[in-house]
Image (tube, rainbow, N blue to C red; front, side):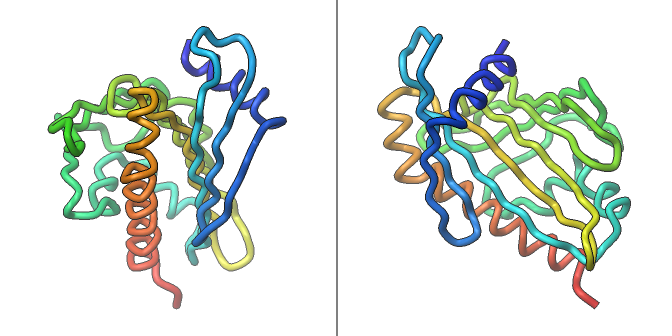
Length: 193
């Protein structure tokens, strides 16, 4: 399965990780060796954390509601949830979106909510969409002054060398912009006293 392959990649990649830190984001290109028919696979990672001055329960009540994603997504980004998602995320939940991808137009995006630890963490994994692989783990941890929220995204772009060029030219920048916007919106929604 894709999740099994991704876990195997992570275990092997821990020994071959090349990182660069800039602007609060930790970007990693993973070049694992081993049992993959396509040879070397380039994986990317976006890691962001922030401390918000609210309880873990309050923050969980916000981040575990699929409809709230619209509030923390840049308005100019063409993104919409299809159908009526439930009020809370749960393991096995399938969420269908549409995103507008440059040069590809409107693209369906189907994610599955996985590995939910109620009140603490969950992962959404792309089943259909613009990425070859997308796993986004959301973690909440009580810390002094509030709750530390961590977003850890492991992804792979499709289309081989053309995808790698697109990643350098706009995919990475777009993801950085989205998560910078999310950070700012969450600070507005949960302001310091």
